[in-house]
Image (tube, rainbow, N blue to C red):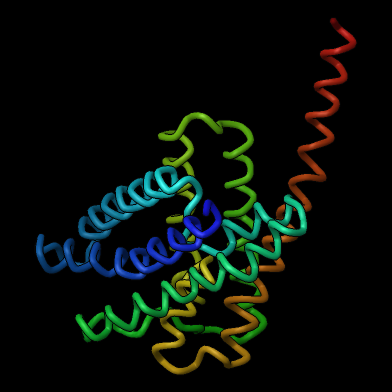
Length: 236
């Protein structure tokens, strides 16, 4: 029952995430009347951070619901084999389906929203860009979960600023997505979801970067924690 609840939560959050970014832009630039200048971007950033706090709270309320496959994959890599299979066979497909349904309904409702992120550089540079961005955000997320696990506000604040900064760095190159399910929703709507560019840049590169980030973090952080524990036991 708990696993089915998570699958449903993943679908709902992924559906909502597909809408949230577009609704923030519409609210700031159309409803509030800001121009696409520095002030408008600052206001949009403030609402984007508030939006990330909302989704972090929803993830907490649903006891682990997520809208990004990389979030659940990073945890599954560190868990047992059954958790990994559950993640790959149930949770990630649910997130992808939620994004596809969300984007389809979004385009039908607001046709002028555009067509989502696109690759603006060559294939190898795009894969490297998405890989590096993913490696950075997964490493930051793992560090926050280890260092300030109980401080919801500080953890979400640092995570939100990091995601926005990395998104800005990659927005003109690949879209700076770091979320394969979200990109899949837009790619499916355009009909290019099975192309080599989409699979390599927005799926394979982020997944490899996530695995590398988890392994690197465990390799560097775990020995330090063990050394500290050994030093403490000796002093006692």
